Amino acid sequence: MPAGLLIHLAIGGKFARMRLVVLTFLAVALSLPAAHADGLPTPLTDADFPVVNSEEVALGRLLYWDPILSGNRNISCGTCHHPRFGSGDGVALSLGEGGVGLGPERIANPDNMPEQHIPRNAPALWNLGAKQWTVLFHDGRIEVDPSRASGLRTPLEDEMVSGFDNLLSAQTMFPVLSQDEMAGQYGENDVSRAVRLGVLTGEGGAWDVIADRVAAIEAYADQFEQVYAHINGPDDIKFTDISNAISAFVAFEFRSDDSPFDAHLRGEVKLPDAAMAGLELFYGEAGCASCHAGALFTDFGFHAMGDFQFGPGKAARFESHNRDIGRARVTNDDADLYKFRTPSLRNVVLNAPYGHAGAISDLHAYLRHHTAPRAGWAAIDRDQIDRPTLEGKDLFSIAEDGAEVDAILDAVAFEDRQLPDDERKALIAFLESLTGETATNGGRLGIPDTVPSGLDIDR
Image (cartoon, rainbow, N blue to C red):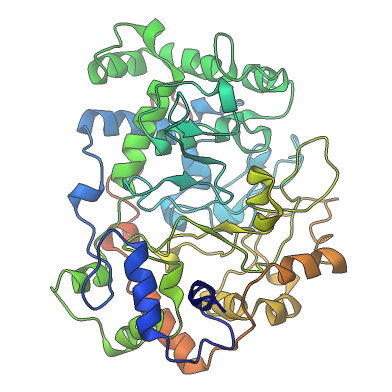
């Protein structure tokens, strides 16, 4: 069996108990730009993050929290990526358009019912501004691609415009095109109508509609003129400018490199014994670092881990299935079936629930499932999955489809392994050491008192 496959067995597999410390450390070292001699990553520094303009960050902060960007003017970026919930929203599958309330208290609006849950769990935003990020979303459908005119490969393909400062800037603007997330249902507003017609970019497209809304607010127009030299009036404000400002804010607000683990890497403190035992497992025989590599705790790769699948699945409106085949939906390659991007573990204890569908809210329970997914499927308590209720929707059709479940689990490249309680507790202690002070406090700047549109802010 190739050494790489042995390493990829991660926390599970019949080989995990073998002493693969040297081999694992070698794999970690090869996957990182640089590492300590002991196999640990080098600490994050200012050089890993873009230099931000404080005025641009201030503008982006207002736009991030302003519902003006959503079709029906009722949802902001912060609705599903909120500091109270670790920069997620605290539920398995969100309700975007048609939902009211925040986090686990969000419910379907009986006067404007959502069509479906958002298919995947709202990911955390920690350190997405770091320069190392080359791919975003659970399935990696947006990634750096120097061969493209825009420098990015996205679902818009040739329609993708230039002008986004970076990958994060482009990512922030795709939710506004989703009818379930922010745009609204077909025909409800000028944004959703443009989306329905397939006019997304260019003159009269959905992005233009939103840019015109923002530009019509004098306070925003003035700030854009102050921040960007190429903007001399409201008519110069483009969607890419809005996106660039938001990305500058996200990069600043959700930077997280002030955890006990960071202090340990810098030689300022030593982790407690319990966390050190977990660290030795994580970077040693458990093999976690083969995927959760580097100071960002991700290899930016895609792996089939057998996470529990429920919800509407990831499908086009004309498709009638609840499957979510992950990366394969982007690449059309069967080798990528049921693979999802390795999430960063920064502030993981704040970012429940876990998995691409958010089926498990308890980190101990998720770790048990993660190391033994075949046994984990049978142990899932569906009543404990924290999701807003949406009547009349069958969320568990995939879980009841034996062939589909077999396919998901057959894609997993390692064997189930039940971690001993002491090892699991040690790993959890180490994961707790990845919680940053800034994250615990909800970010650097927090929620503004008001936004220029005058619309209500989700607090």
